[in-house]
Length: 96
Image 1 (spheres, one colour):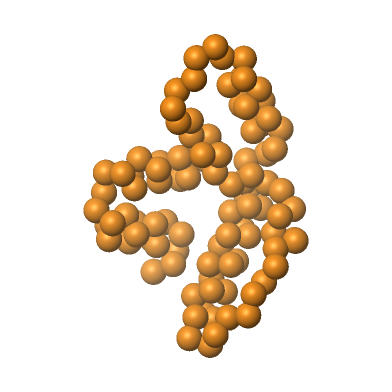
Image 2 (cartoon, rainbow, N blue to C red; image 1 turned 45 degrees about the vertical axis):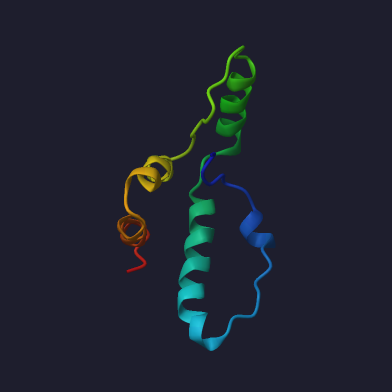
């Protein structure tokens, strides 16, 4: 899990039609996703991390790389009840 990587993906994202019932939520999530990418980890940092992994002779099953808020989400999803996790993510992302 690499988290968000700062690329130009947001500039090339295809925006789909959204029904009126979901438009407000969609617009918030869309803007949030794009801001996360804009504030993401530099691609060179990711490349160095991956290169270091490739130098290892033994690998762990999972690696987490990225900013703290993204890395912590993975174990929290495993240990917290679904509703608690979702509410926490909504607060963290200012979606509540």
